[in-house]
Length: 171
Image 1: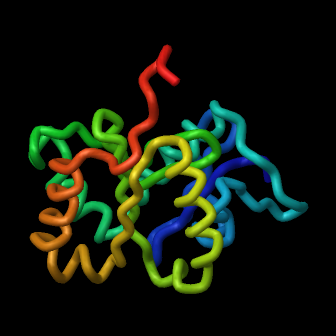
Image 2: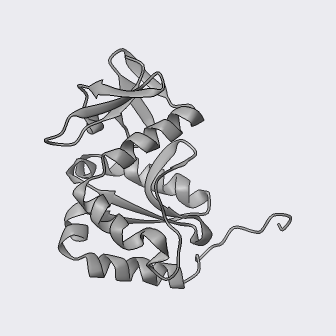
């Protein structure tokens, strides 16, 4: 198998194979690690930029309920006029939501992230060193109290990055 794939509970798995979607028997957790790698039956392979874009497209098709609920409130500049992108590739990662103009990444973590906290910390550190602030929410927070989640995101958008990167040509 040479495709990128994901699955959602109760739904068929999807894979991106040779420029088209196909059914796949792997789960999202089996395929995607926090480092932006995808695991295959015969080892592990880093995704190319075109594969990362394809991987992001597949993830957009299989949003979790929490991601879908948050996206409904972030899209179309509904929150503080900020433009968010969903399942956006940044380097070797695909982040859940990204507001490039404010340097903000919002991640919605499911229960599998309870077992990969070190990898999540590493990923957050790398993204932070590249000028992004990362906010993480548990999926049950998003589903149970979306207003508190949106307020926290709005607070970060209204407050500039504590250590902004110098503009091009400075420093």
